[in-house]
Image (cartoon, rainbow, N blue to C red):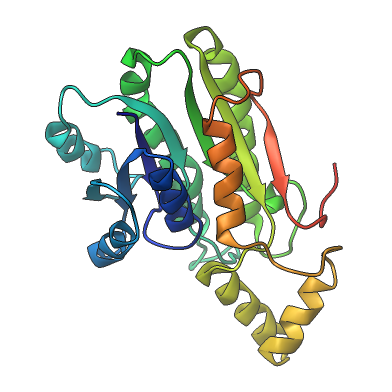
Length: 251
């Protein structure tokens, strides 16, 4: 059986990815740094038996317990580096720069490298790494310097690893969602509304006016894109960033 590692599996896009992949018959390793019950809630929505580990992807020590508990015969064929945090930052004593970069960029780097040996020894001819970046890797937003930098960094990491791992037949790609119906998006718009001193509904409508399709994506739509990347229906796409943003950014 193929096993896929999914970080940030306790909610939103991560939960939707898990649900889709379980429907495709994949075993999952669910990772999340927050309350374990969120991972258990995700597991209850899935088909089949899966593994749950509460871990902070940016802390190397947390991986030791995971490695000890994984069966030797496990066949890990994919890594979905989806964990991350959002929000604004501003230089000063309460700057969140380190927090955001550690969670979004350094944590992804650690996650991939900690599970890379499993990918390399899998007997599957093609294996996959998918990182969740963001539309904000490609456009600037004031007071989001840490988030924008961390997500842009993931695109550099994607390209570097795509070249590095090509001869191992490991395909490395990133997805760049725009607005998605998640708790993180809701919190983001609430902060915008407070900053603009506007009602939530008005702030949301204003943000949707910048999206040609005029709507947020559903987490299930992002999961479909990830599933396609893991499906081996194509084996020539690597080092790419896939935009799923309702037309808000067109390269």
